[in-house]
Image 1 (cartoon, rainbow, N blue to C red):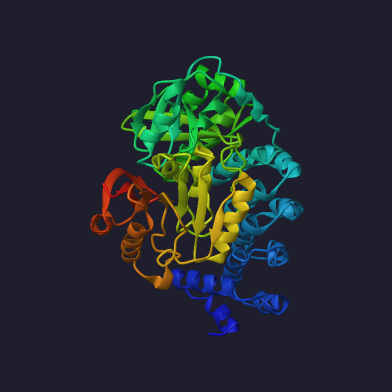
Image 2 (tube, rainbow, N blue to C red):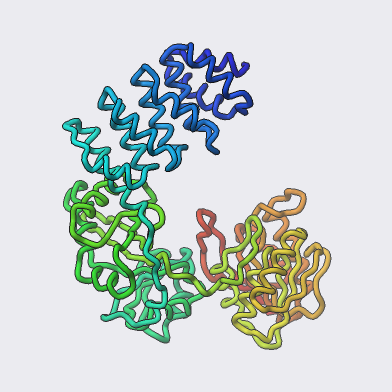
Length: 505
């Protein structure tokens, strides 16, 4: 179907078909937008309204001028959809056009759409006009409230000083350390010297902390940390936003904000179950705006994240600083697809129980994180890495240089060649990506174990993650390895078993 034919079909009464056509049109290359605009102007209002929605899908500013022209259309529905689309693809430069359209709006749905667009793309002038806007229409009133909230968020941020986290807290704080599920015990081991950590839930370690928070980065396996606030109660779902507000205005939250932040505190509300809960999020934002608290709800550009977890009628909130830089993995300047995560690499390096005399090899080194983390634990070890991808080796070389770590990198097939005198293999092997000839990962890993049994000396060891332990365990035993199962690790929906294999035991 040609572009012109798609355009004509926009007049259909079938809403689903029209939505599909709009998506198809948005994907077309608009090489002659001016000619199309001429055609659209003589078509029905329904087609012009659909065209306005199409332009809302075309980013890069190509349709902005056309949308501004549609704001003067004779049909209120067309003007309404033009405003909606400008809210998506417009810029601050469209503020005056939207304000002018607001003065000429003839229906409340049109006013609502324009106010919403001004909330997303407006500036000080839009704020001044919307503050004076009075409407008894519920939709317009709600749009006004939310637009003012969004305009408040768009104000320039206050520069925050992360050095405050080098100070101890005014009182001992309950701290939660989040990690990949399965790695909690390592986190406990890493921070046991400064407290009494406990596993609070899957992927969560809890500890009472009275030291400078930067000390929490002594855990290289932790993903991030948060301060646990006093739990609140919400007997019915509608009470959840109020419970969140009570937690954020508590004395504990006030002390944390005052000690480590700078007002106004920009907070992003996140929900532990992964859902958006937009109604609750907007309610929290509106409650904060009405309160006298120096706290703003900020979905983007936030300084803090308030992570809300609901268990029956109990509402638990953990407050995490987003402006505090993570000093642990600054060496990670290059990456490759399906690369290991640095906290997982740190866990493997810890499980390796390295000795100064070890010669360590990562046969599937990717961007080199496992090898670098080995050097972080025992700087004296010799490091070798191999990979079939030159891009991966280039990334590993850059990361090693940034970490000031020396490693020997080679583009070879781990199934046919290995460095001399290796004593330990540490690797997070490919689970399906970067596997040669698109072979099943389990087959390749089983074949590698046969080769590893030949490469390693009698007291050699191999530490890795396997996605198919049922298959690889048999291959390991056949190759002369004793298998020690360490943990089941959740790698973002993909589970793998961490193992330590000993040769010749």
